[in-house]
Length: 249
Image 1: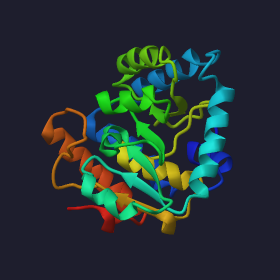
Image 2: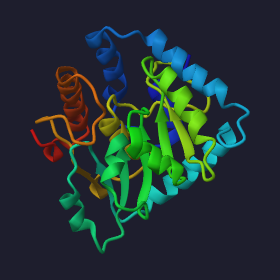
Image 3: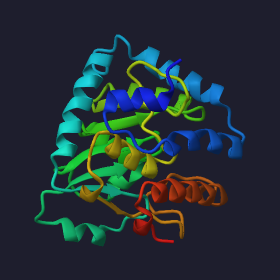
């Protein structure tokens, strides 16, 4: 078996630091989650789209290639976290910055003119659905606790007149063809891992709306105590990647 970090480094050319992969096992242990459940969800998602007319492996590869080019050549790549406020977007008016939204944080955008993609584990509710219905690109993440959710949501999305484009991600220690482990844990830090994996240089990346002070307004409904624990993991990953100063804590 090829080590997942090595496999991604070969494929994506510039992978984040190894700890963004190993932390996934630490998180599972901390919360008592099973990697087998994560594997089952990721493999099922992979298999269900093998011959899909919209989201086959070849179509997802084209999407990934296009998105890589867009992000690497962007003036700025602005990552939108769950605590982002509309006022924080004002400084990017009149610029050529593009946005990468962490799941429901896409709801802060009035238009999708400069939205590159949404990084999501299908928790973004109506905000995510609106972006999907508008044909935006979704980096869709499978894990052991969202299998039923992604089945329902993908059935809905494929019925849209302008369905979204997909890239698939997972969080397991094995290699899955056409499904990628970009590293990280929460949608926010996984978004950072993702853009770094594509080769975006750190000095061109800006994080807004990343906070450990409270559960963000665009965050999925969850137990506050659990969410706060997850945010501490987010902080650790983002800090290890060199963006700790961007977190409100």
